[in-house]
Length: 193
Image 1 (cartoon, rainbow, N blue to C red):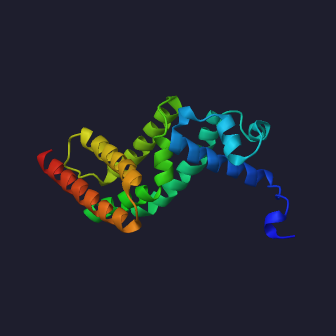
Image 2: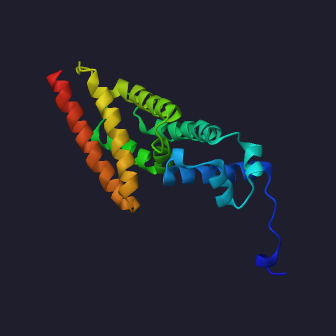
Image 3: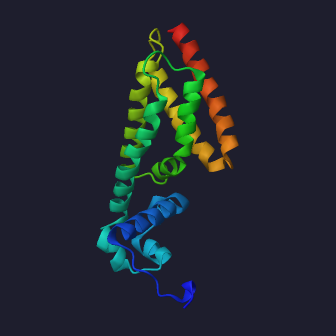
């Protein structure tokens, strides 16, 4: 028997669950969350709906699992980038932006729908990013909207970049440009504050 003529190997429960989540994430990003149903996921996996329902009760359940598993991992990737003291410099913003770009699937997933789950998770994402940036904002800046604008800019720029960028060199170039832009804006705002 050749490898292609062997009967398909049964996946373990954990591997099947991961396979379902991977397919769900790909479909949510490609088609938008609201356009994907349990039938779509089963069809793409060439399995039955009951098999998919064995692991997840709904696409909302899948989305919650994806975000619950992937968001903490992203924060762990970002944590070492933030300086332990002082303020952000252009290279810090560049590194932060580049790290966000490397989390392209998660960023696109967060933007694949408009329902309450997405709004809540995007809001939490921006709040967490803002809280991490807050200690490094120029102390003399008295404009509270600056921090919010920085986090929105980082997130929006990252989402748009991951949709358009073709390679890592282009990602790095965009990260440097955005980092310099943000650092210059923070410095100017701090002087005006």
